[in-house]
Image (cartoon, rainbow, N blue to C red; front, side, top):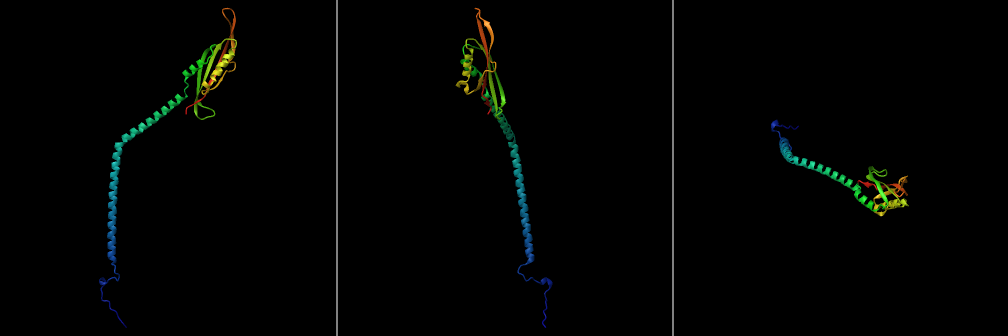
Length: 211
């Protein structure tokens, strides 16, 4: 029978492995501590940088805020002025140049017609067949005349208002019902009877778009 005698004390025993586990644990703990410290330092530096950047941004905004408010107000004012300008331009574009119209009308009135009244009405709004706002004008004339064939003079005036000089602006010209009538029979100083005719005439212009 063979006997083995172990004469080593417990604290003198060594692990057979070439790696010392206690050393590994100590080194690992030291590495974790160093990495943690580095992370804390990096986070601290980043937070300080973020704080400095935030303070710099706030200081820059404090300098730029008055200019920003001024530019915002300026842009709003420019928008209002532009809207007002467009509105004025649309009203100018839809305006009927009455002076020019009357000058052209005068040139085509027969000599035996005497105008008694002239009235211009207008309507602003949307047409039934369109969603675009427009302005519409209508010229209403009344007058009197004498002669053997007064209707010929009225027809001549109607033809003039329907001529190419007005066709690009005038949509329709008409004499309303009972718009051409004999009102009175007067006598001249010599005692001869004279018939006076009265007429009405409507001249409707083409709608003028605000756009």
